Amino acid sequence: MLDHLVDRAASAVPVTPLRAAGLAAWLKTQPAPVQRWVKALDFQAKPGSTCLLPDGGGKLQRVLFGLEDGADRWSSAALPAALPAGTYQLDAEASCDPTLFAFGWAAGGYRFRRYRSEAAGSLARLVWPQGADKALVKRLVGALSLARDLITTPASDMGPAELSAAVKAVAKEHKAKVKEIVGDDLLKQNYPTIHMVGRASSRAPRLIDLRWGSEGPKLTLVGKGVCFDTGGLDLKGGNYMRLMKKDMGGAALMLGLAQAIMDAKLKLRLRLLIPAVENSVSGNAMRPLDVVKTRKGLTVEIGDTDAEGRLILCDALAEAESDKPDLIIDAATLTGAARVALGTEMPALFATRDATAEAVLQHGKNEEDPLWRLPLNKSYRRMLDSKVADINNCSESGYAGAITAALYLQEFVNPGSDWLHIDTMGWNLASRPGRPEGGEAFGLRALYAFVADWAKPKSPAARIVAKVPATRPAPRKPQVSRLRRR
Image 1 (cartoon, rainbow, N blue to C red):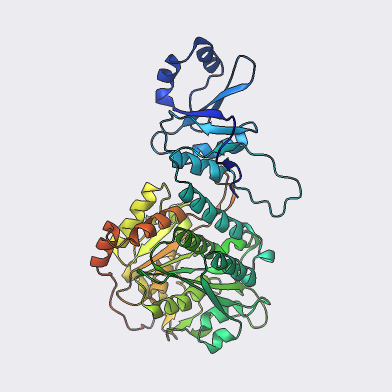
Image 2 (cartoon, rainbow, N blue to C red; image 1 turned 60 degrees about the vertical axis):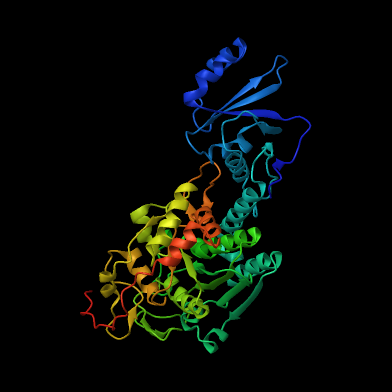
């Protein structure tokens, strides 16, 4: 996967990263021919720009490379494809973080080529920089690549069974245990909403359950695995359905995070739950205003068959609580409302504990992998009231859609639980260095850094989170809503 990074090379061209503010000072230390060449090419050290310096014989002697101010982990991602084929090494005197430089170079080599018939173009190779954390780079780029591959694969080749196979492959590599409940067995074992969403498809729904680790705090990850979403009987329009192969992006994000956790051998007890379904249309599809009794015992009225992600997650969250984990994290490509509020590149974060949320947000800032917290505003819970059931799966109002979706999920999390909910796009709409158009695991690096810190018994994050009680309103009685306005 990372064959464009090598341990050593007989001869490698040095790459000298320069920031715009330091270019003039660097040029003063160089011979006059180099100064004239750089000025003739009008190289200004803009982030991601390059300047190739030849020697007296016309061979490539050095590459100048523009770097952003501060920590820069993405500019170097442009280099594997931009530089001539060959082997390069980071200038020994470079004033940049070798791990970030190597991460960018490694991520810049990612390509989704499963369906390409032509041979892949050659990439420039990098000798691992001295001082770079090779294990961390490989771990993070491997997890990102896994999630991207799963999301970008079309639904014809990434249904519930194929998603299960991907989980089993990761489990086998890290000696984790996996079991799954498939088809009508979901009803027999009381996962009615997972079954209800997936029953209309010819591809059987399932709950995938991975367990790993025997010591440390309990962490349970839950990922929405809707492998394709037609919208059900409340059918999506073509423009909205086109990207719905990405509707299992939450599952891909959580599986990538699980792989990174296991690869690092963090001292925790990990559980990963992925309800995997295809939301399709047939004679036995769920209908608007149907009522289903969930695993937790709450009854749900189906206000919209296209609000299916929260239905499969609610049974999975109820199961997650059965182990009394120390922390639950769920992720889902859940609402367009989160994208309207925050755009496509910043996931929405909801949390029952302020300290946990603040720790995640800080790690997101540190990793340049931001999330943004939205409130679990309890007064909006009334928007989910049903006339006939305990709760409706969506609000009739177009307002606060991301918040009401999170409030729905919170009904299936026990009071006092430490719970994080992530509402993500899961897709890059345009290409940038190291982040090509296609599936994307937004928040993965932030979450991994947070979990790695959280798992340390004496870490500041662990101490703070352990002391702060969850904030959650007391359970409320179901209320009868006013008649719907049509």
